Length: 187
Length: 277
Image (cartoon, rainbow over all chains, first blue to last red; front, top):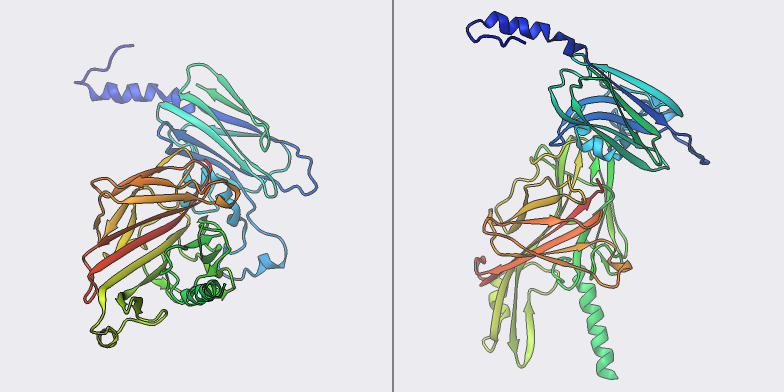
């Protein structure tokens, strides 16, 4: 608890090193893609990201979308790589799109992936490592958005403070396109 | 009966002639209706263009596409694809090959004169024809009274964006009424106040009334227009009550006309898409 003296920059550096346990802090997101009883089911597009209080994006955590479109059209797109690719529907994740999605180049390493079937998925992130990066202490919101072709759209958010002193589970419950979303914060 | 029939016939003729000068008929609002405005690179949009009493209701006349000017995010002009004109609306397609905001504009303008002669109102030029100064001098008889020569500059625009909104295509031309974004034109959401700036000849247009009409008027009992006013900096802000297309318009009349016109009417109309957050 000794305060580092200004005269001794080394002690500041050491103090920084002793603070490394914070770098091991974890954040994990469990989300459910709920079963939906419909004649024509398409897997939802899902985006997961962290927002600061001013709604700027702190970190893009995950994006599930249809990366390749089936059928002969996919083999020879009429014009441009994205003419009829799965990126066409990304603006339907309306919040994600304006919160940085529209500026991302896809596919994004460690963030984007294929759409997922109905089920529960756990995504784990570590402080200091991509895609979470170095999350500065402060107030954040975890945002999960899902949009489904021939279906609806749902956005859930979970506000939280970072870092945490004790393991903190937080939860939000979807009503249509998302099931339960839990955020587990570890010191 | 005879006179009534006659007037209906005249009306029909005038309406037919009005097709040639789409923005001249002020009673009918010219509008553009883009299929979407927030897209990703490579996507297509289709746009309808028509004029009707209530914006977006396809029940009057198609708009001619001769004066269509599309500016890409890099500032270059691009041509529309698949242009077609039906009875009630024209249409064209556009592929957004560049990231950024495209400006789709319909520009209209010209000089027209009216006067009284032998108790009748006369006009020059005949509808659909350009104004010719020499011809105009001969067209007005010495017995004419109440000569009024006015210039009009009409601008109708809509905007579509692939990816992140940009301003490269939105540089003001400095002529007539124009709108500049403070809030990006394709970043509009219910519950968020948007601010725009109205410019006249590139300078803030102060104290100008702006009318806002939401799509769907056909399914309401009233058009429900909202009147706004620009402040000292030409700015005004809008709170969108619901998602959908909006028709925003303003006009001013001043004496900065090109000769031989003595008054100038500048108008701007813009179509914006508002999304739910």
